[in-house]
Image 1 (tube, rainbow, N blue to C red):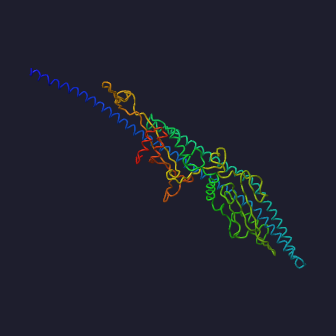
Image 2 (image 1 turned 135 degrees about the vertical axis):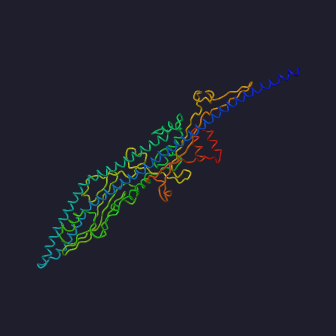
Image 3 (image 1 turned 90 degrees about the horizontal axis):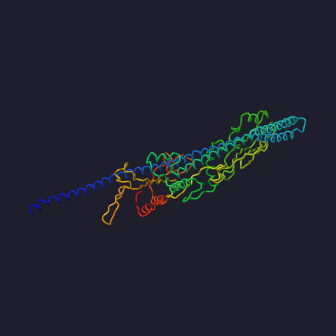
Length: 507
């Protein structure tokens, strides 16, 4: 009996080992499957995060390109206003010729009177002859003045057409800015327009598109970077049109060359007037004597809004000086002459009036609210500065939030998931438990910023603006508030709460 017991005991131990081995293989198989699922989920998560980063960066690049386009096109508008200033300067210079002739005419009437006053006796008959000659010269000056007015009159209609064409050019440039703004907004809202959808196809096929609410945050950020647009919350308000117009007006006036800004002030005849006119004025008509503008008095200028303000409501140019004539025994007096050309609203003014034929329309610089410039109005894109460091001084940010199902759900493609649900159910009597081997869904959260930086020494000191194309894009870390805002907008309230309750969390 003891011998049979000794023989049965080893068989019992071998049966227990088999059971333990089977259980071990099961646990090992589950661990292998779990490790495969974990590595698959990690790889998908890394790919999804990289895709989210590329999405945020790409949208920021689109914004930077739009802002750079605004800067270049704003410069084109300023150049157009400079061209308007130059056109007015040319017209004022041409218009003053008739006035200079007429002031010489008045001076020769004075010289005539002085000569006649001295011809009271037979021996002074030479003065009478000079008086008659002075009268004849005065008539020639009057005729020449009328002739130059007529010449300018022929130019006036063409001048009005040029002004209208330049005004329309500004409208067209702004219309292109408005189109760029709308299309950029569309891409920021949906994250797939204008080629952005190719990022998903290339990086992570099957990932979701940009969350709609997060796209709304991006659109708001971009709108808030431009002064005068609609749909901006959480930043400074829009400035009034007059304040915006001052910026472009000052840029346009500062961009003028010296000639339209400050011409004249010469020792002799104004050098910018045509030599044939100066020869006729000083020599051909009188034949001799001193017949010229008084040195250092002839001057002219042209600028946008030629009055004391800088709201850009008009373009104006003026030319003025003193005309002096001396001939034979008579001397005239320095007589002031002037010419002014102004374009404002649907009309304008032109002095002397003999050179004027019609209207000189000018819509003004940013005379309307930006949102009212869709059909016309010289508007432009102005940067909306914000002195709040938490708003990055008004520089826009681009957010990305995308998701993807990590579980494949097909045993043929992912056998490590063991079944289509990726779960195992264990039952022990009345107790059961589920073991999830495959992660269901992952999310990628990213932020990029569009920032302004001019090249060279002191480039960071230049404040952001829309007149220099130095806008760039880069990925940027989240603040807790920003991350919570984006997660809340995306509907991931649990993650938003986790971020908010974890101070110092690296984002």
